[in-house]
Length: 303
Image (cartoon, rainbow, N blue to C red; front, side, top):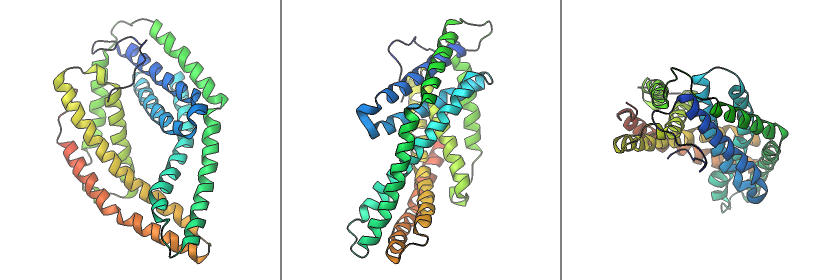
C-alpha cells in the first residue's frame, strides 16, 4: 500500500533528493491530518480511525526526517502528533473492548445486571476518552502545528537541492536495512517473550511496515513491488496478532480495575470476559509465530 499522495504533489522517484522527497511526503501527511480534522463535524466518531491512520503515516515520515537531520520543527511536530495520537488511542482501545469482548456476551442470562453494570462503566470511560479526543482534534495546538508544518515543508521544497544530497532510494534503503536488522535479532520463540517484549516487537514491525509503505515510490519495478507486497503482508499479519495479544493484556488489566470492590454480579461478568480473553492467547501466539517466521525468510525489496 503506497502512501496517499496529493494530486498536486511533485512526483518522487529513486533519484529524488532525500530532503526534497521527505518534505513532499511530510506535506502530504500533514494535509491528510488537516483534512481529517476539518471533516470532524461531517463524520463525527468515524473520523477517529481515519485520523489515527493519517497520524501514523505522518509520524512515520517524521521519523525519517529526524533520521535525515536532527531537531527543529519536525521534532516539535512529532511531539504534537504523539499527544493527539495518545488521546485517540484511548478511544480505540475502549471501542474495541466494547465491541469484541462485551457485546457478544449480552445474551448471557446468568448475570445480565452485572454485565450491564460493567458495560456501563466501560461506556462512561469511553465517553470521557472521546470528549478528550474530540477536544484535541479541535484544539489550537493542532491548528498551530499544521500551520507551522505547512510553512516548514514549503520552505524545504523551495530551498532546492544541496550538493552531495543523497537520493531517497539510498537514504531509504539504509533506514529500511537498519530496522530490518533490528527485527531479525529476535530469533526466539515468541511464546518465550514477556508481554512487554512482544509489545516492543510489535512496534518494530509497525515502524518497518509504515516506512516501507511511505517509501514505495523510491523502489519501483515489478520485482521490488512483489517483494514489498510479500513483506507488508507478513508484517501486517504479525503486527495484527501481536496487537491482539496486547489488547488481551490491556483488557484483563482494565477489567480487573473496574471489578475491584464491585458487587458479585459485576465480578462474575469480569470473570467471564477474562476467561474468554485468556483463551485467545494460544491462537494469537501461534498466528504471530507463523507470520513472524515467514517474515524472517523474506528477501528485502530495497536491496
